Image 1 (tube, rainbow, N blue to C red):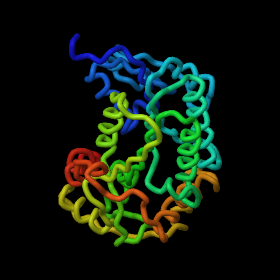
Image 2: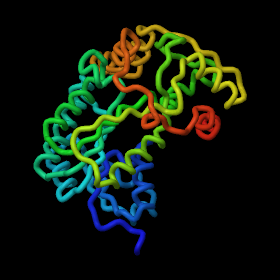
Image 3: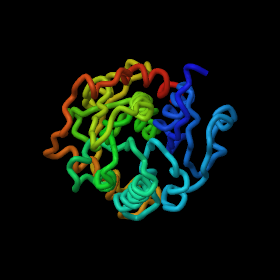
Length: 296
């Protein structure tokens, strides 16, 4: 068909996640048949399954990653959740597999889902592993775009129990302003970059959502969107540690999670300023009405 892209191989990791599923949808609509690397193909709906190529396996398996990306023109890489006791080391281990695949398979362009805070390189909990992945991908000399994303709207889904009682819990100061973003908007940027063949070299692009928000402002927005009173309440790092320990997390995993907020809320200024290139359209109020309200 005239509107289809020439045959190219685009590999997508974590294709059933909040960002990856959007990337897959847009690639299909653009006329591309992507290759998906995932552990559980049964999580794909039947219509999608018929329109993609699947490599089943774990991103922690270097041989699987090499096989999935052989002949690839472009790669969307996400360091997936890891069972490692030290999450930052786990992410770095996954990132090493990506870098090896880029080098050995000659992948021209890689879009990497990084995070605000990766520019610190050290001292940001789990994000340190994303920073290490950035460095390893940079060392390949291939084209790589690091998307340093803000705080996902979907993180609110992890606090449903407290929200049902009217409380938005956080370890961040209630007046600390930071970027909040809809993962679907990140997916839009990823797909656009994967489809474009006009860029090369190392690039960094932040994804900041429509505007920076404090948790106090988020509580006000949620109150309007959900039709119920929500108040923001700051909890201690030790409260989070206790809850994570009760859920079975190891000490290393706990400190990786707690370390993210500690590392970014104290004397941290993001490297990438908000510009027209970093600002995405979906508002928190619209997202919460569409996705959070039904979950409550």
